[in-house]
Length: 73
Picture: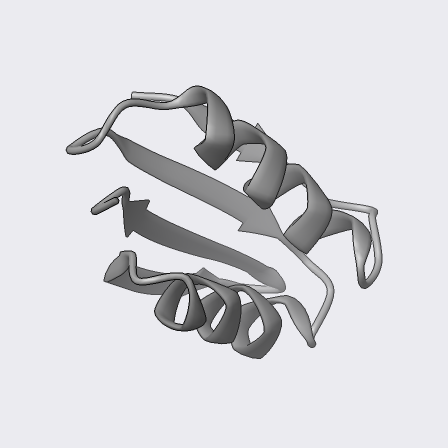
């Protein structure tokens, strides 16, 4: 399963990296993004929903947020 480590990066970089990786993936593939920017959870979740992908899971481990998205289209 592909994973992006966007820790240490700030908006909008985690969203840009998510978009680029999702474009490379096939429908049905799952991507996990790890970030520590407080805005990343809302920004990536909103981007996924707006682009028709499924938000599978959001987990927090201290400062690090892990967001899992399934490519739908």
